[in-house]
Length: 307
Ligand code: NDP
Image (tube, rainbow, N blue to C red; front, side, top):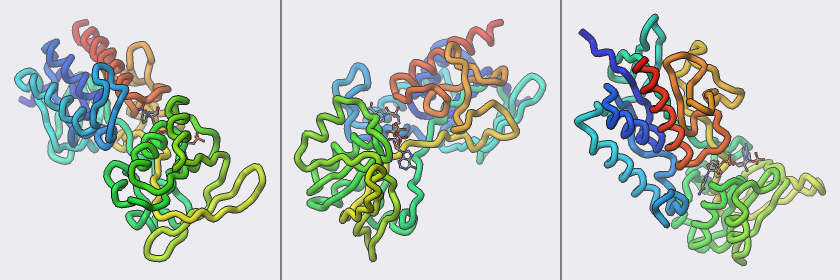
């Protein structure tokens, strides 16, 4: 007879791993499904606010999380390399369909995180990989002594700018409204003579020949159109929740496609399904928060299963 798991956890980022460690320790019969153990922060060069580590590379944090979960391998079944494509609700359980298998579960925790948003202006698709990139850590060194721009005004944009200042000749941060990153980070970056911040603009077009040569924007206040010569563009404009497998109103989503959760318990709108981390409508997206929220979810799932 097919196993009906007490819990299926989906996602191998900080939220999923925290949930996995807690559920294993509580001996909840759990199946853990993830495509990989590379949460979004895996590409961060340096993370300075993961509590307990003054500084850690994103890849090292991802590895530590994976090791922590796998330490409990005898108490939790881990399926790596599987992607959930659909979840069907039946009377008393859920069917979780992946690219390889299908599973039954009494409860589900969705911790699938989010994926990076792409810039959509003329030239953006054409020049992707030809000067436009979405990863400062991966591609920054290729832009040594060049003039580069970062698009976005959040913490990711400033983190990328910080990395790029080590290589580039100049780094211009282009933001459509005001900067929203932590003030300490904004002040630190903009005090570097190689950095410049430009706010309240409309990005219009990316131009070049074989490679990017310039970005064109309009100053919203003056209406002036500016052509900024640059050789690299790093896009950091946020992320979209990874919820493609959620169909037919399985759980309620908000207008940003984030899973609506009860902030006290992480319950979704559907009994038996919880969610934690960047795929939810939680206001602040942080590794530390994702982990705490996932723990909250497991406490609530444990209670639900015991009743
Ligand atoms: P955010 O959503 O915080 O910021 C995205 C930025 O991109 C905003 O400034 C936004 O402008 C701009 N933007 C969005 N869409 C477009 C578009 N289509 N065209 C141009 N600009 C656009 O995303 P982040 O990736 O920076 O951060 C995500 C979360 O992760 C945040 O909670 C952040 O604090 C956290 N984080 C924390 C870090 C840390 O603490 N070390 C490091 C990195 C991220 P607007 O403001 O006008 O909407």
